[in-house]
Length: 206
Image (cartoon, rainbow, N blue to C red; front, side, top):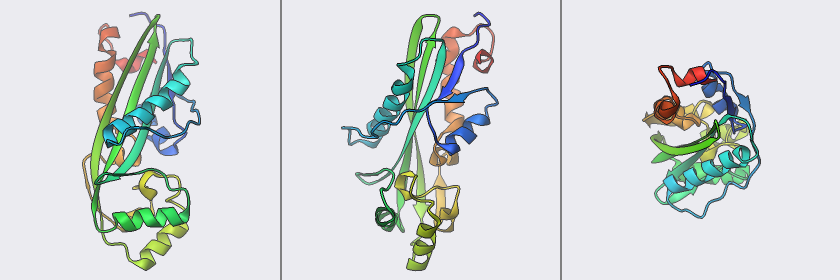
């Protein structure tokens, strides 16, 4: 493979995903498009993957140079109900009351889009983690809602913040709950880039 470098683009404005991707120690830029985070799918795996693919394509379709675009979408699911980002404090409180004292699933879908030497390749995967909440009493609920931490996060909480006051258990990848399953991403990327490698690491392409 030639030494021509590929541009690595993270199609997400999430500071949490930015931080996780930075652990790869690969140069990358951020470019995201505002799209409606909606899907006609009701299955959580298909739902999150569909939105992740839309986020990635919204950036990828405008590119002409060799680029690797990574997009992601995280949702919280309890039974058949999917929880996205709450639209208000009232809705955040409702979400948290429904999740209180229960174990729910967190799904993060990741989509890889590559344009290289005239060819295009795409791949998506979905990682699931399980999170258990203690029963959230009124005082704890009020305190958490006041922090504002719930408003820009799926399920109305962020695991790396003050919600740790009522999270009792995490099963699976912690980073997946934060918003990006980094260890799974590395495994998937190793396989994704294999056809393009000649005795080098995929990280050397950037």
